[in-house]
Length: 428
Image 1 (cartoon, rainbow, N blue to C red):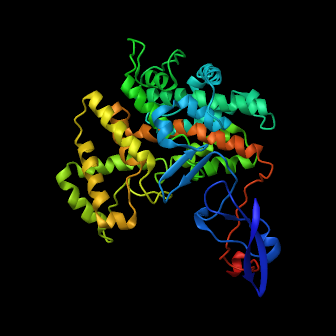
Image 2 (image 1 turned 120 degrees about the horizontal axis):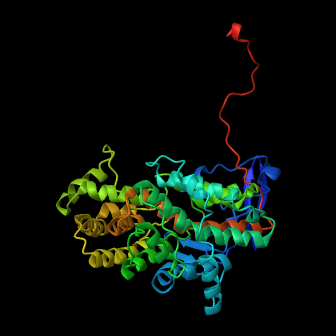
Image 3 (image 1 turned 60 degrees about the horizontal axis):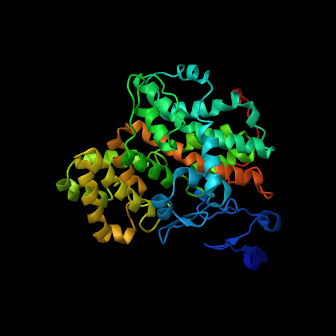
């Protein structure tokens, strides 16, 4: 809706622009006609004050620490739901009935296997290749194997591609891990849950049966839910931007994976774990807090603060509980977790952190949990990509269905040389 007008004064003239109101959250000034009316662009590096799309999937209130998927609070979904249920919710807008959930789960389970020729594709990578490099390549290559789901104008093909991506990503990630350690690939077992199947493909071996630990399975399910979608972050915006050109869905998700690989985005939990290991033991925390406060010291406390949240990340509260359960179940006596708990308590009561609103985020604990389960740090971002795929797919589908969707084309503030004539090399 556009009930109000915002007035911009430029060059001695006033121009009016509609103000649109969402169901919740800040109002948005519709500046689509700004250039036509004024001859000027806006300047917004990082697009932190720009709404690039209209979406009904995820809502974040960073000041209040709220994260909603289709209106449902993340803590309720993490505690009561399953990843398949959350996936259905993100894709379809409503929680499924029992029958709908059974059909959806069955459909996903029937798409878990990869084309057998893709196993030879893996062998083209060096054994020490980073799992994210493999994920980018394999997901992008899916379009070469599944030609029947690349026509984005066909809703049926879009749905099949969406189901395939959600179903195959655990298999792709598990195979990347197996390849890196020289173990044979383990095929999916469709009688298991989504997360149980992934754990078996990752840690199971053909030589002996693999029993899924229910506490670990529950932890992975919760981690997947917490990372399923997070509004218009860098990787989601990348998926939308790639999709705006009409690229096939596999290429779009591969682009999202490439963006997620950046240490400022998907690599944050690995950085937080490395920081906790560097601190080593609780008595060294004051030393590192003092370094964090020193502007001349390059050290930074990782896992605190967030680009959006200016309050306690609601996902971090859930993750802290999961960490205690996993470490208790596995009997892990990890000093890193002691450091994490002590550091969190100090930060929550320290004026420096309170004034700067540096609260623990989801990455603060997730690295500890994943390490305890047995994942190397190189797999952390791959797991993030696995979970975020459903959000990317939901956002991509929403973008394709949006009648106002246009190819992304940001503008710029040009500060280079003005027009000048070419000078032959002999005269320079």
